[in-house]
Amino acid sequence: MNIFLVIIIVVAIVLAIVSGLNSALSWLLWVALIVGVIALIAFLFRVISGNKRA
Image (cartoon, rainbow, N blue to C red; front, side):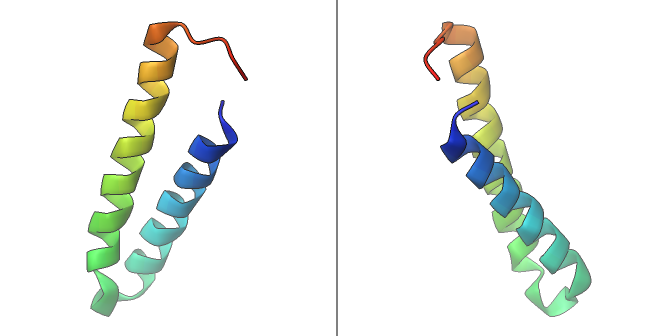
């Protein structure tokens, strides 16, 4: 997996945890979900396209 995708996934998880702990920052949950979906789409695109470059 590309290191950039790993960083995006980690950021999405951290944002989801932070937004879950502080209800005043609930908009971070939406940001985390959007970033996570983008990372998932990018990962699936790489898998489906058969790009074997590391």
